[in-house]
Image (cartoon, rainbow, N blue to C red; front, side, top):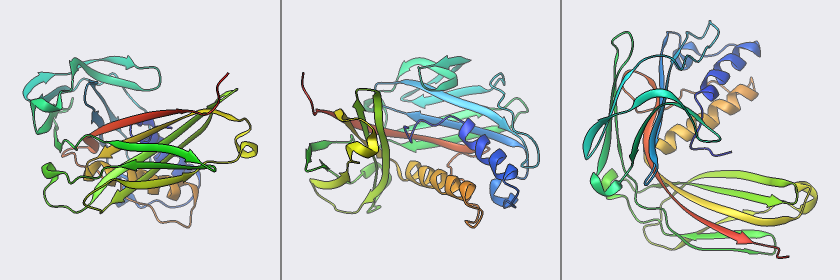
Length: 273
C-alpha cells in the first residue's frame, strides 16, 4: 500500500483498535481531548486534495464525519480555496479539493489555513523537496538495486539528512502479488547511491513476476517523521509490549500532516510473451 497517501481512517482505526485490545494507551500522546485531523500531500502536477475530519476523545467511538464544513485555503504562489465535497480517485477518499494542479515552480513553499466549524484556526506550511531522481534500476539474481541521487534540499536548510520512501510493486498472472515500502534517510551528499531490495521467491509470492514498478519518493523531514510515527503507532497497536507513540505532525490547531513529496518511477518488464 502507498505509505504516503493514507486515509484518515488509519488514525481512527489505530485509536479504536488500541482500545479494543484491552491495554492502556497513553492519553497524553493519543488524544485525550476532541480535536481535528487534517492530511494533505502537495505533489507536483497533481490536483490539490485534502482530508479533514473531527476526532473524538480516546474514550469515545471514532466517527469520521466528512460533512464538516471547513474554510480551507492554500497558498502556492497565490491563494485559492479548496471546495468541499467527496472526491474519490480510485483508491483514496478526500473531502476537499481544487481544480488546480501543483506547480512547484510557482513557489518555494506552500501554506495552508483553515477555519474549523467551531472557529478553531488551523495552519501549516511545507517546504518543497527536490525532484526525486532514479538513476538506474535493475534486478539481478533476485536482488533489486535502485540507484538514485540524494542532493541536499536547500529549502530545508542545512540538515544533513535526505528522506525517502522506496516502493516496490510487482504483478503476476493473478494481478498484484507484491507491495512493499521502505522508509529511509540518506546522509551521503552526492550520488548516485543505491538501495537494495531482495525480491521474495516465487513460492512466497504465489506466482511468477511479470513486471515490477519501483517508485522513489523524496519527502520533507516533517513528512518522514510523520510516516515514521505512523509505522511506530501501527507496531504499538499490534503489540501491547510496545509503548504508545505520539503521532508526529506539523499542523497548528489539529493533528496530521501538511507536506509535499516528489516521485520518480520505473517499470521493469520481467517476462515477455
